[in-house]
Image (cartoon, rainbow, N blue to C red; front, side):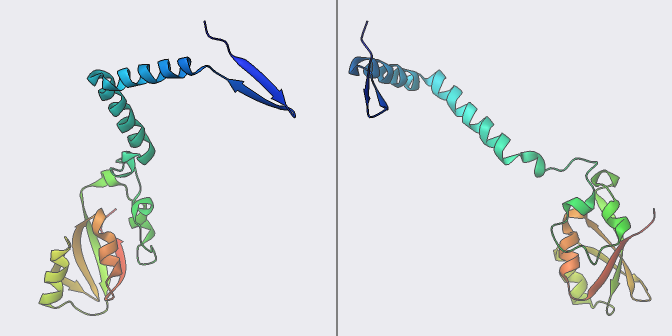
Length: 154
C-alpha cells in the first residue's frame, strides 16, 4: 500500500499522495467513459439536471394558472376579470376589445395574421368582439388602436 505524507510548514499542511494512486484513478475514469453504457448514463444525468434547472413546466402552464401571471406585457389594458381567468377556462378567449376607431379590412387582416379574430359586425360603441388564445393577448394589447380588453361572459 502506498504511503500518504503530510508536511507542515508555517501552519500550512500539504497532503502528498503518491503518483501511482492518481494514475489508477485516471485509468478508472478513462475506462468508465469508454464504456458506452456508462457514457450514456452520464449523458442522461446531464439532460435530467438541465431539465430541472430550466424547468420546462414554465413553458406549459398548468390549467389552474391565472392569465395575470402569464402575460409578459403591461396589464393596464386588461380588465381584472380577464387577468383572473385561468388557462383551463378554455383554449380560445372571447373578448370585448375597446378600439379608438372601427378597424379597416386591412387592420382586421393584420390581426388575423397574428392569430386574433375580430368580428367587425359586432362593432358597438367603440367595442368589438374578438377571439384569440391567451398567448396572443400581449400582441393585442400592444396595438395602439386598442385601449381596453375585457372578457365576455362570466
